Length: 434
Image 1 (cartoon, rainbow, N blue to C red):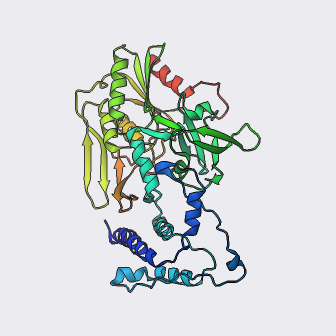
Image 2 (tube, rainbow, N blue to C red):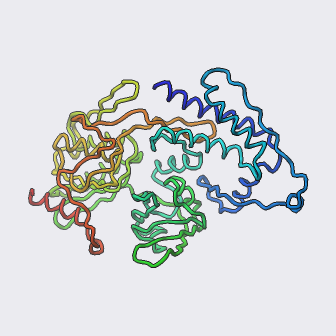
Image 3 (tube, helix red, strand yellow):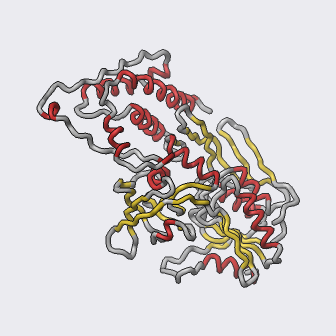
């Protein structure tokens, strides 16, 4: 870890503590904007939203009465060269406290904004500060269950939240939401420009409560609202099907903590029916746990390196397969697309390099970096990019992606309902060898 990164992490941790300590000197009313925002949203459990709501001015203040002035936080004296570098931050904050006309934000909000702004200078979207409510969402997802609307979502190329797929029989499907719908607002709060986890934090909430989404749909003129009643959802991590043509199909939605066990169970179920081959669908799979990616790849490989991990300090690790797994001999095609990322790319790259499977579809996303996770004192997380992944043949994943052996772009024109040209091409290859 170089000195710049050490200074960045030090500032995040030390700065947060210093800002939190200064909160005690702010007078009553200093954080009223934050409190008002909290009072105007539905209770949403661990994903509680914070929305900006203008605070009203009291009659005395409107007429020029003597409004209370917050006591400015003294500028701390730098103890060393590193702290002196950030002295400008304290100078600016001191001047804002003394001169700003209006309500100052809650000190926690200021701390979070300062941290995010500082990390933005690293020009790495994966080095990020995760607020406590969002960190709780990510931890909940890893368990395979959550309370929400029952849909997979992603960000499109313009940075808008898109419904990728609704869970069969789930609240989103029952409310009429469709794949490719774009969500513009959640309970009247715009999420345009928000991160995916900020948006999810607004959509999630306790089972039985309602959330109203402003939806933009390509074939509909103008946005419209859809109200969804949240429910307790079990993430359908794996879909298993034995097709009439004798080809087995397994779709893995994400590499959660139970991914390997569920894929292995699906393989055993299909192999007992002696399929002509297996289509392993990793399309729109955003990734997940590294160890799950290694173990899933190992199900299909009898030996050899699965992935190489290189760290910023020069360390290097090679994760290897071991013989004796259930899927080592069955003919295999792996489906990928632009939504296949991270752990999905590890699996596809390993199976491709060892010529264990034919990779079919579209070039993958290209997310081959490792984030080291630090849990902070308030439940928030700091994720720092500290390593990169490479395939067994030493191909970089990050920024490159995995190019399929057989390229089958999704048709630009509309396809028939329930049609899947990429899947049908994979089945054709397994049945004909071409």
